[in-house]
Image: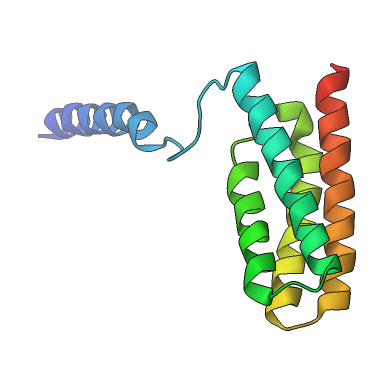
Length: 131
């Protein structure tokens, strides 16, 4: 009986460990993006961030600004380059703060956060093209 328990537990452990990598896959992520896909994601993200900045400078409606910030967030998720991670995280953090500030109608704070986020996205773009 003792020997049978060892065999069954070993088989069960092996089956569990071999099935885990299949379950742990990032949903919605591009596994190996091409250079063109990364360039498109970076340029579109910068364009949307700049559009959000110009919208807040022109005094646009809250929903319009939130739309640009939402688009920026979604497209920034497609930037999958390891060396750009810190810049992407800094910019995304600033844009998140800006979204919360816009929702609370604190447009001065939101403008500051968006300006900082746009600077980080420009740094990200410059760093990508420098390699």
